[in-house]
Length: 248
Length: 249
Image (cartoon, rainbow over all chains, first blue to last red; front, side, top):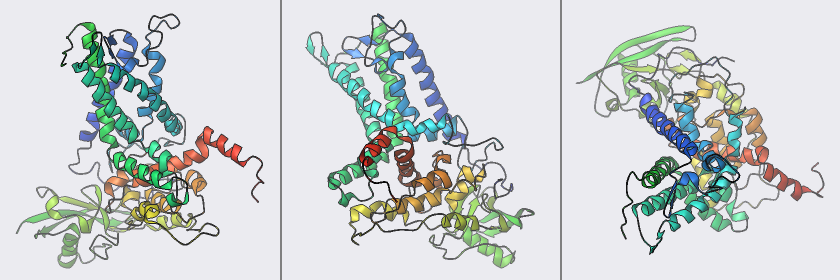
């Protein structure tokens, strides 16, 4: 069925530069994608002292006994599945990369078959909660790495890298705790909080997560930048391009 | 007094074109005031649907400078005055005349949704924490701006398969009601086409009542549909729980 309306609206909204919203997303997500792919395949400069790049954590078969390629390739699909199926990033890349739509009330290319998230591959977005479960596991590895980054050969210390890894894991945790699926799991799925066991705590946690959920986009971008920067920092130190500054 | 140029769509379903009118701009004036000025002084046959002029009846929806808005809540001083202000009818619905569109399709969709049905033997008592969510959805004034901006309806013409954000809000209000006993997840998946929504949040952006349509209604409903149809673990849990129980009549 054709649209009920009529083709009377002239082009894009007057003065509405919709591409202003789209370009930063293309640059940000596209840039991260290119950098992460390069680093995943590079297979080097991912570790220095107590620092381990988040792209390579947990470190598996680093000496290539069973896996001849970069160890990042063994694990990266799992943590990347979480942002790829994330409700916020879906909005961002549907708009920026698929132009579906490019912006609100901005005309898009019609005539092709639109299936939304009902057909392959986008129907797989429904697996978001499973990637969320995996993200919890990976987050615990990254917390371990962040804590370990404070313990140098000669004992406890604080390096710039320690701070970078700690900030990164805090931002990633905020991103995870503002997740729509987690909010649903912990309380959103209930119709009546007062009718179930532990309804009070579940309502409180649902309310808390809902408050964080309002900032999901912010946490998504901050954590994306921090992961990229944390890896970049470890690479710089590991390759000898810079020296890690010890603060303590 | 400053003057604004309005380019207002004049015509019917068969066709039409924008016509320019000059309107003096007074302090605090909204677009609907400007339309009334045109009606009173220049084009008495200009068709505009309006009622409360207070952002509560949801009648005066239109596209101002290409953006779906309530004309009664759009102040003239927020629009650039150095070029004509375009005012068009909502694109997703057929024009009846000028700025008035036929929104009756929405009422047909509404009829598909089973109304509130209390759980068997329910105690008629509700606590505030249980109805916080539902109260947000009750703010909807049915202006249909969310339906109009939704690209699934506006650009892809999926009116046959898709209910649209307004009706996801309505279903969310029923599904999350603490006393309601009916499940509407099959309806959401199969008849209202929830999966066609690719959560681009335009409905939330244009909602004059500030309802967080995508985050609080559509995504929670998508999660409920996943619970029911796409989560193999939950399916297994349900199977184990129901094993040995008599099949429902």
